[in-house]
Image (tube, rainbow over all chains, first blue to last red):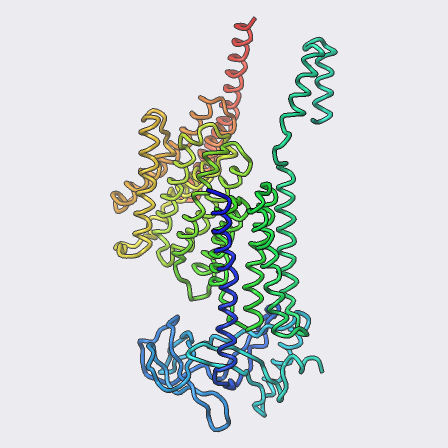
Length: 183
Length: 433
């Protein structure tokens, strides 16, 4: 093979290497700029949940839906259609295994269990990356505020567009968790 | 040239074994021989340097700097990638040395990983490690062939194996079969074949000779799923494939320790066979196994490959050159699928098979005057005897006698072989005189 052919081959590979992350960025930016914003209330996470490095793990109150259908089994990918409740937080409108083409936003979640007509699922945006040094404090703050969560003031801000979601921030008492831990 | 070598030359001149002129000629020959060849050590250090810098960049970016804005973080993510691409492009275009190509490709490999990881962090993209690893390897595979890079090939084998385990075995309650591992693996194989063809005795090939069978052996676990019992059949057939590959004519001149497939195949076969000499394992098998699973089809594919490789060996070297280890998987298949319902018969047959494997290794060792293989055979038989103590009602005296006999066997066999070896070397010496 001539050098120039190898080089052309390499340029193509290099462009793909640049294109793939760029496309990831573009997708996320598109959701952030034109997607609908929802607030997902977080719920107390298990205090023994191990500290998992430089991100914090989020669990949501919206993690189940009452529906008598035994065909939903663990591991299934489902469309979770969402809408806002009276307080302005996200709630489930309906579940489906296929795209119902409703005029509602949806996220693709994974079924984690189906018991006594309640289908449990896991939302895809369960990781929030933090700066290494702040992550532990953030998880601690997140836990403590969730535990004394009388005001229901801990939530995740998520942009959603055509099934794609981007977790933008976690808000505690009205401020971003990053600022909250700096206090 | 090393000073030790020069000293040896001087000693040879002093003892009048060679003339001073000849010593000069030898010295000159070695001094000029390596001029113009790339320095291997330099290549190795180049790769390690790039490896360290690359992983260092990943670690630094993993800090996830909060004070930087999204734009700056994004630029930082692309910076190492662009630097890596520039260096790699430069080494291709300027036809730089092997060192340059390997080092720049290694650095680029890591910067691709760092770039995708950082984008995932910036946008909190849910952490599916499997998809991340797959994207990373897929984006870097072409580098293996564009730069003839062995380092990238080895890194790809490593990450592909990790990928297979991640999605096939380690995910809690959510395992899927990592079919794409096979695709990744097949993409790397031509590079391995090129090395076999061009550099059969190189250290690089030795690393591949070990890395490839280790990767397959580990990754197969991710394909087994719920068919535990069929898993054994899969592994035994795989070890048959590996052993037969290790015995191919192309590896004939290779030293045993450079032949990873042969060693892993042989050890794997013996260990699995030893497990099947126990009674309990045969009672674990389901009466009506389900033959409509992907595990079963994979087992058939493995069997076909094993038979093909075995057939090729027999065709090239004839029946007489075939040893028992090569056909063990066939014997196992026959016993497993035809006699497994015959009560104690399969257990007895397996015990005889392992015993025969031990004897066969002893014979190979004795024929080749190789103490390692000889003792390997003795070890197989000793372990077989030890295993039988667990599930037979033999009295302690009988057990004791068997152990003493096995120990005596070790001593005597080694002693006789040593004697024979000494006798033959003495005869050779006498002939020369």
